[in-house]
Image (cartoon, rainbow, N blue to C red; front, side):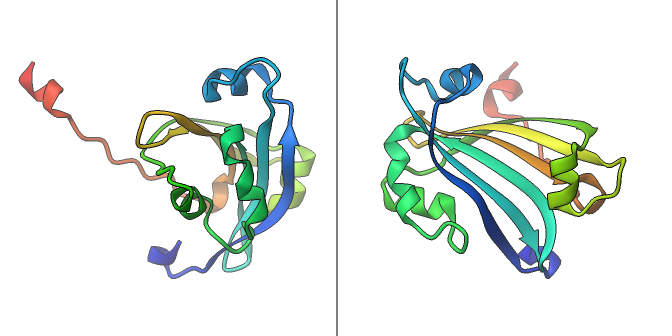
Amino acid sequence: MRRRGLTASSRLLAAGEIDPEPDDVAALELSPGDKAVLLERLRLASDVPMAIERALLHPSLRDVLDEDLAAGSLHSTMEKMGRVPTRAQAWVSARLADARERRLLDLRDPAVILTERRVITDQNGQPLEHTETRYAAERYTFEAVLERDEEDLLR
């Protein structure tokens, strides 16, 4: 957002420990009965709602709940805990927004949102975060840079 001259901020919608869904259990490599750490925030750019971010974190990151995550960076907090977000794999799709999404993102009905599901791992390849971010498509540009790696070049 800073590159676009906007001020990024967040509003905390929900935080706590929850029972994860089966896809979260798989993404975070949880054991049966493990709780996940929920962090749901409304992401803003110069006070304009841009996205709803629902992050489920590995239970080893429970201490992030003690931090000011409305003002601070989740990933900086993870780094302070010795867990460096290193790799992300994401899937992006589009769909119509539901009533809650339209209300939080200040969208008219009907409205399209971009939905990004992402799994982030740390420097040791251990899962940190399984996130779904729902972007206001009319205000957001999704940029991707793709590069060939050395293995591709050797083929």
